[in-house]
Amino acid sequence: MPRLIIPGIPLAFKTKRIRDEFLDAPLDPRLRAILLEQGWHIAHEYGYLYELTDLIRTRSEQRALYPNDPDKRSVHEFRRGADGVIRGFEKSDYRLIEAWTNKYFPYQKAKYRTCKYHDIGHGAHLHNQVTSISAMQDFFSDQS
Ligand SMILES: [Zn+2]
Image (cartoon, rainbow, N blue to C red; front, top):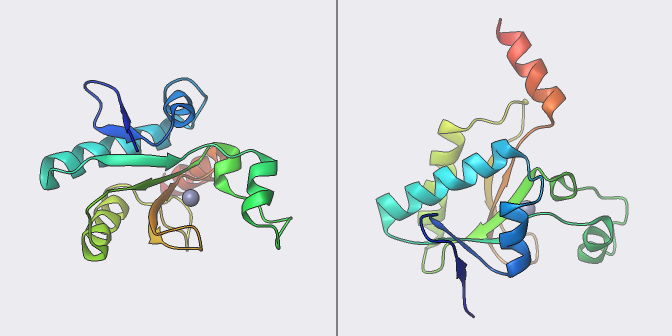
């Protein structure tokens, strides 16, 4: 399958839609920044290309993915979730990316993580997420 790239950006995009969402849709800018940093890290430290496979999800797409759980919501619906793969990576390599991301980009809410490597029935991938803006503001106000 051809992978869409943009010269100068260390990411590939599974589809044109995903590329357009990354560039033009109001994807949460904190998430976009994390994905770019991950892409640079993966390219620079490992020499691999990070491919984004799922960004923004509509309500009906979310329901189609989880037909047995129609009330389940996802950060992807709120433009705060991103999935990606690194073709050729082993599980242990993914675990290193997961640890690196959570070290430098901690999730600003207890009990959650920014980056998870998992397979919830649709293929193993890296899932990245950021908190809601209000949760982030609470996090920083607690620090002062
Ligand atoms: Zn995801």
